[in-house]
Length: 134
Image (cartoon, rainbow, N blue to C red; front, side, top):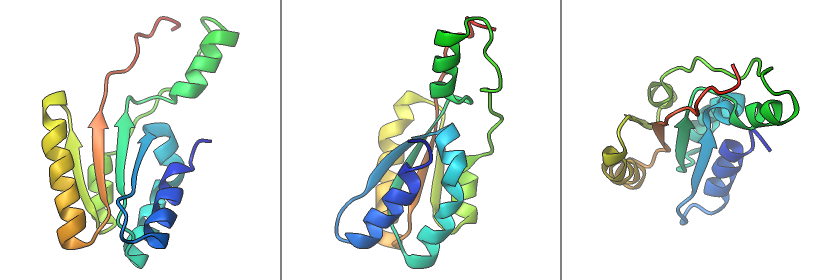
């Protein structure tokens, strides 16, 4: 369900501090509970959160396209800089705009988790689907 990944990753990180916890969230889902990064910072949770940002509620759009062709509505998003948001909450944040930069971003984020004992977030910009139904 949407909104579940970030809080569950934080809880898993707190319950199993010796394990690596990674979650992948779409941007729409992240917007539902991303403020829980404050909880991660407050209690020392150290998950790696990867936000896939295509600037839309993808699942909702898919349902609209299937059931109401050519009537897609309210699924486009104007997102903040999620990496900046992570830093504002006291964690590590990095924005990635090119596929080639993903491996280095992951290495850097994991290093921040291990050395600084903070959560990390990778804001991964991805292409939006073709707007065939607008």
